[in-house]
Every structure is written in structure tokens, then in C-alpha cells.
Image (cartoon, rainbow, N blue to C red):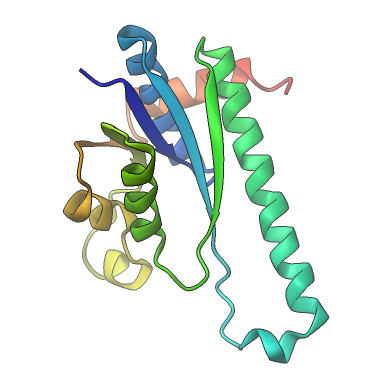
Length: 164
């Protein structure tokens, strides 16, 4: 069955919903979990224009990613799962593409990710990393929407983790 579960995270409640499901699966299957954060700089101006400020912005984004990974790793531990982490920088590559690449390189056999479930114009404007992952992943993908009982599980877990 599934022995290597990749869980992309961006620190959002939706990503936490995916993490909770991944941890449930990992515990039941005695699977390894890898948490992945993609640092993505959406700067409309070339880095040369920013100069030193660009370096400060990217360092801040890296620090935010490291913080999100630490929180997710701690949450996984609280849910009874040891998880390793990986921070990847987008450098102009779409996030979904990097997630698929990370799954291939780590030999994941399942990707579990939260999704907002956007449709129509909002999906077109915002893009959909989840859609890219589903279309290109070499392994099964479990998409978890944060709604209904998932939202309650996230809230319960967030309450339990509030001391972190």
C-alpha cells in the first residue's frame, strides 16, 4: 500500500486539513511522511531592480517557509507521526511542477494535499496547483477540502496545538 506520503504545505488551514488526513493514513499504514514547502516569490519586477531588498524579501520568504514546515512537523508529531521536511525554491518554476518533481525524486507513492476547491474564474485567475498535481503526478493524489468535518478536525487540532 502507501509507504511514502508527500504532503505539500503552505501553512494555511487548507494545508492543515491535508496534513491531518495524511497523518491518519500514515499512522494506519505505518508510512513515512515528508512535508514539502515551496518558497515562491511573486515579484513582478526583476531582482536587479530590488537590489539588496530582493535578498531580504527572499530570506523572509525562506524563513516563513521554514516556520510553516516546523509548525506542520510539530502538528504531525502531536498526531503521532514523525515527519521529515523539505524546503524547495520555485525560481520561476510553477509550484505544482515542483511538487510533482519532489514526489518523483523522493519516490512518493501518494500525495496528499489540501485544496480550496475553487472553480470557474477564481480558479483561472488564482491558478490551481492541485489541478496541476492531479494531471501530472506519477502517483495517486488525495485532495482534501477544508469543509464540513474537515474544518472541524482542523479547528480541533488547531486548538490542541495552540500552545505551540
